[in-house]
Image 1 (cartoon, rainbow, N blue to C red):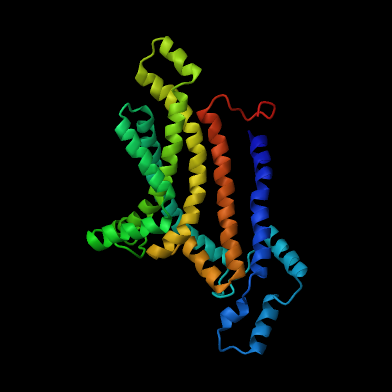
Image 2 (cartoon, rainbow, N blue to C red):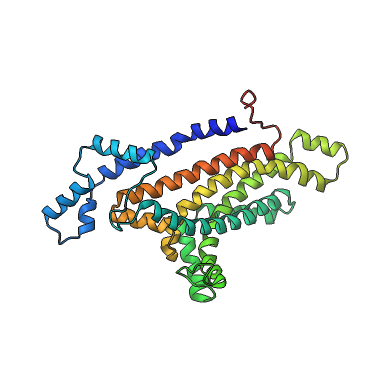
Length: 318
């Protein structure tokens, strides 16, 4: 198993390396000047050039890439151009808030999507099944920002039961913390639940016609036992894959959601860094997101063997 994990980590390295290299190139080819953004419109050309020289932006591209690559290997992302704070410190502090939002949203998605998918896949009521399928299609097609704005309008403006913006630490006021996290977590989680619903439903429908299910019925096992022990367990394998994908989707959706609800997470930090053309901060945020993708994918691979005994870590059988 240790060998398998090592091989998977090596295979996932391009998942981090390729986006980071592309990000480095695209940032420096995109029009705009970080030095001018920091100094403002009233800065003179001499002041801008002096700052560019200090930041190493006047060096040839290959020299900048070499220095950047050496820092990346050492996990040194430097200091934020605009804020003057170490990038690692900024990213880790904001990542804690985003992680809380992602966990709440993932709980909503996992509790709602697979459960409704299992019900839809096993129900004999066509009207209920069609209603759920149509609802999932709407959820998949709906943009994150639209659902967030809709929930603000309903729960914040009309009903006035939940706050629409801001953040309070759980250590300061647990009740207010949950109230502030409710709308962004639900708006993120519901959309991911729609995708999990579809995969869960399809997995249940597919598992119901597998030979081992037919054999279990022929042996006289109760239908409830067959459903819980064989159908649901088999149907969970693709769902676990999509939960891993959903985790990445939550990080992507957090960029928009955190901005709409004014949550001081890594999504809002990344958006601010892009607006200010803060190269080190952008690269630090993207690197963190890529690391999360790698870790989640590895955990998903390890869970396969638990859910499906046919899957082994042995390289000859893989």
